[in-house]
Amino acid sequence: MKSGSNLEKVLTAGHFAVTGECGPPRSADGSKVRDKAKYLKGYVDSVNVTDNQTSVVRLSSLAGVLLLQQEGVEANMQMVCRDRNRIAIQSDILGAAALGVKNLLCLSGDHQRFGDHPESKNVYDLDSIQLIQTVKMMRDEHRLISGQEMEEGSEPRLFIGAAVNPFADPFEYRVHRLAKKIAAGVDFVQTQCIYNMPKFREYMRQAHDMGLTEKVFVLAGITPMKSLGMANYMKKSVPGMDVPDEVIARLRGVDKKKYAEEGIKIAVEQMQEMKEIPGVAGVHLMAIEWEHMVPEIMEKTGFLPRPQV
Amino acid sequence: MIVGERKPLSEIFDMIGEAKKILIVGCKGCVTVCNAGGSKEVGILASIVRLARKKEGAPIEVDEMTLERQCDPEYIETLADRIGDYDLILSMACSIGPQYIAGRFPEARVFPALNTTFMGGSLEHGVWAEFCQACGDCKIHLFGGFCPVARCSKSLFNGPCGGSSGGKCEIDKNVDCVWHLIVTKLMEQGELDRLNQVKPLKNWLTSRDGGPRKIVREDLKL
Image (cartoon, rainbow over all chains, first blue to last red; front, side, top):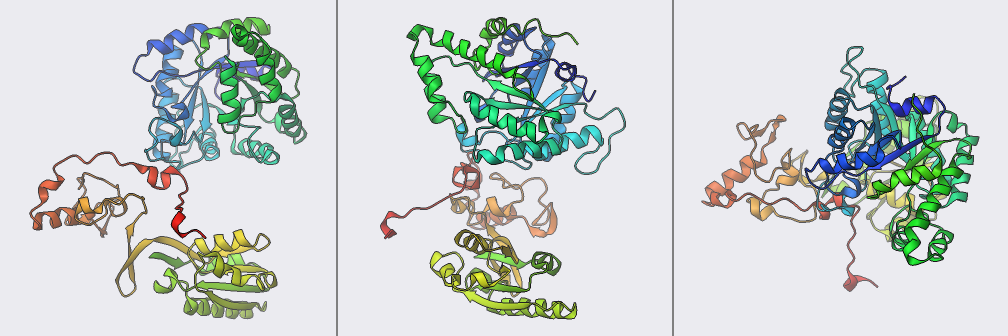
């Protein structure tokens, strides 16, 4: 075991994993995170805690992870390169591991222009792939970037994750970038929200043909649509998001009051389909500010109870 | 001006590899002024390359050319009829030059012979220093005419920090502490109280942090 995290155990044992997501509040109110834990505990194998997602200031991902773990929910700490240089990155990794964090998702991070502090400086001292490499070096070679060594047993034991977007351009290069993340040392990847299933199948076919799915656990990203407005917004305004017309049409085809219900139905069907795609090791369920629907969604997928490993 | 410095020869020879015919392109702009990439420096580099390769028994044909500027499409265009004759192009402009050449001629293999070092000026013959970081929102008038963004190692707006010593910066005793200059100047002018207010947070949107920048002057467009 690289980290001994629940997520690692579930995946290594060959179970179809399910991860969830929890966005911390824009305040110091930790009870918001504890409340969300109730809807996730026992329903998913590990929960991502976002790191100032969309560049909006929130309670830190490390604090969010600790709050969840205090509630008995294993968490996956997201870390972006936007806000920290290599000194802070390594320091936060050491601190997080010391406090019981076992999964770390390495991200470049959204540009700060998207957020509530567009006038801030950005750092990007490392990029996401260099971050993966750094965490792997710290874990497996017991070394910091400087060459400073850590005693055996004092290194951060982390299950290393990353994000991939099969729908960004150029499409042909996407699978090669996944290969690069694998070469850098990633253990699992979670994808961008998937709505275009044929295109995702093609991406997975390419990854499978290149032998990549034997080297990394791929968790397919699922975000249920709450409304037609959300679907339209994601189609038109979110960069790198591919929402086919059929998905919009399907939502439009139901009564206005049933958009959410239909959105969940689509998500459940997708999750079940994902289980049949070669190389897909699990799903990453991002019910954005909709965590309380996770129990219902998970009941419908038939993926309960979660494996005890 | 943009100040540049020729790369170490070992790096340039690695770029050239086994090429048999190359073109070294200089620029008559900033890099001529700072003696890094004008026609004189093009000539020197070309001679060094020819001699070294001859000594190795692997002679190379090196042509020389110096453009008015390498940051203007019309001058880059003058390369059009000869660009295909070379295994590679070595640009001695700041990094803007090789990027223009690469963008205009997709088939060309272009390499930078200089490191683009900073925006600055000469202090004395043979010495240049950094003065500006192009943050896009100049505020030097608030600091006695000195720039804390480019010239303070921490880009402090409310300096000097505790590391200022004898007018020098804590990172290196050869680096002036710009905050020492700012304070001294304002003291001499009897305007030290202008520093009393806490300077507000800077808006970095106009700087590189806000993404690649562009200026569009409608009044000048054809």
